[in-house]
Length: 117
Image 1 (tube, one colour):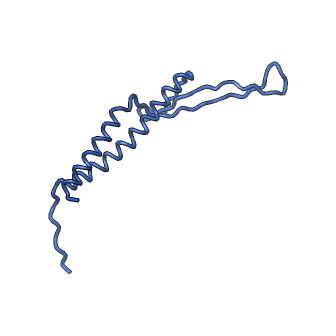
Image 2 (tube, one colour):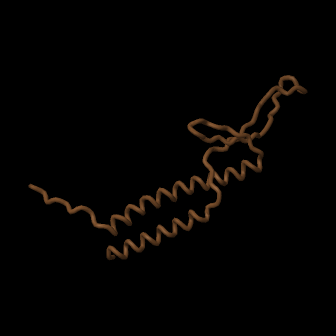
Image 3 (tube, one colour):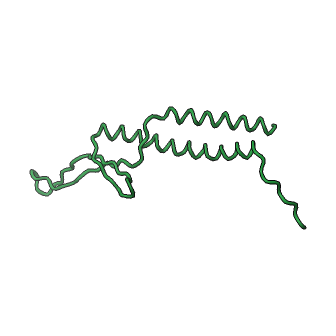
């Protein structure tokens, strides 16, 4: 395979990755945590009552951790957006690596010196 053919294949792969990025939808950083609280049941002495589940979204803003309480439907939507963010990060990493390969295949570098040995 010639150098130009390989570069063209890499460019096509890059375009496919970019198309996947465009289809992702909303993206959001953070983590969703499902919490429950166990407390003594006021109506049955010696037994515990479970409250919840409660959903919390935790993320970083300006270097500080922020926690927001969510409804169950919000937790699902936010969870999809967080998953989209993870996919975006993976696709971006692949695009960076592929970009380097494309540039190395399509540009000329500095001529290497001959060894003195």
